[in-house]
Image (cartoon, rainbow, N blue to C red; front, side, top):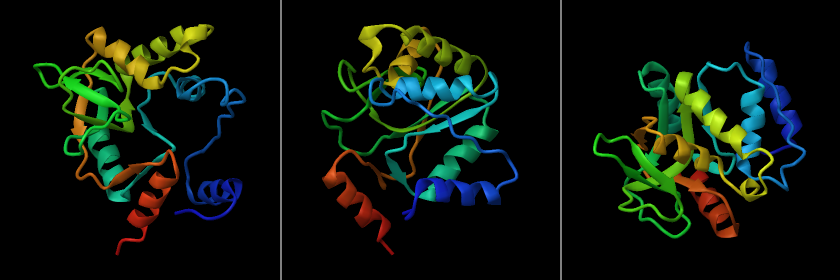
Length: 194
């Protein structure tokens, strides 16, 4: 758990890293959903470099995050989603289903037939997959019906267009999506484990 002002934390992180770190400001964060934040970030990055997206409300073990980044960077897949195949699914779960070849078929909270797991909020995309996701996000711009869309909707569009998203199994269900006080309590309990 990080304690302190976010600007101070980021400044300390920047001082320790040789790579440049930037912040993309989203003045419309309250009006548009997470798709807009991701699109703004993608617009600020090179078009074809690998991008790892980790949802800001995800608390997971650092070794699991590190394994995801290392394995997807070294792998040959251009699109990978981290999936918990063990956790019981709820109405709030971002459910995924698979195609016969094992790749992502559908993703969403509703209308996902035969879900096999929950998307935890961590993906890697590069090359053609990244270009297709960005194009799908750009298609949301200026559409009032897309204001409350999630970026997972862009992932769903690409999967429907036969983009092959590999499903990476989370090593365990030791993670929390922090949306409310109960989730915060669960996250604090997770962090306090020996």
